[in-house]
View 1 (cartoon, helix red, strand yellow):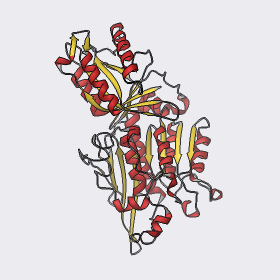
View 2: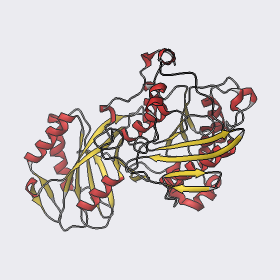
View 3: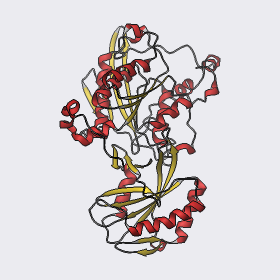
View 4: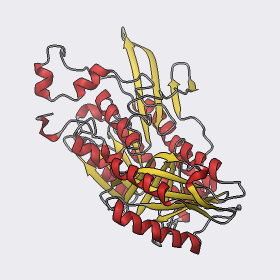
Length: 449
């Protein structure tokens, strides 16, 4: 299977430039390539190039042909940057597009040329009309899934047949967001990073909603002090991995669910790379270092991440404020760096081994445990899971960065503006670079934790 992943802004640009015209037009997409554990090839679109009028040898209502010189030039550029090429052209009308015999003939010539000049990458073709998009492997009758990510995660073309639904179990949800929304949820592979006070509740809610494929990541075992807030944990679970406790509940509710348990720290590169197999990530950690890694994965691999956080401040034995935050990390939305939510010194500390922290003269003492209350965690998690329902199942909820002030019972929808030169979320940074950039995480040879 091949997946073509585009930012929502890029999909809109392609539609705006190519459709609704009296002649066919073309575009070239440059995409990083990465491969998941199940051998799914993901093509992550980094850049769009539109040919000039001089780059066409033919152009009319039902045809568009690019010059050999233009094709050679873009191929040379793609080969130099080790990226894939997606050849895009438009079809007239408002019907869902299909590839024509003329398209197939042109693709055969392109595929033969690229097999000789740029064989290291997979390449694809995409046709767009006012009625939608369709993609396939270049020169082959092999459909390519098209995913658009931004404020929503939409599968706008899928060659794989939809899943069957258990309408008896999910009838009330289907009444809310339809069978297509329910199927979209069931086809997601969701990673939850951190299975403590917030992550355990995320797992609980998602399995009841019908999510069937989970990646659970947490290095810790349950302690007695966790029992007040880790959902579904029992006193007999003390000393057992948190991921196993969450997995047990998931499989009790949905015995056919697929659960991958990873007892690891996401600040380590080997653990972080397991998240590349996810469709959406829930960040439920409490460290700056882990959030730094999650945001890079999100933008570098175009995998949306919903980050969850709660803060309770206590002074003189009294609660002074209670805040919650839910933030989407995805194309078009500001990362933590742009939002000024990461402390560079804390990131540095989290990336150190225990020996390095002990040896560093600028790091004093250990972190104190923050207050945590299950009901407050549950409130914020419900906001985050509802955000997922909006992104994937069409629930009409617009907020993608929410601040919750529990003391004043106020929810605030905020929007930070992405920095156009940010090294994480901008196109000059890690955006859609895939495997071509290293993850800024600890390597496994760094020593102890």
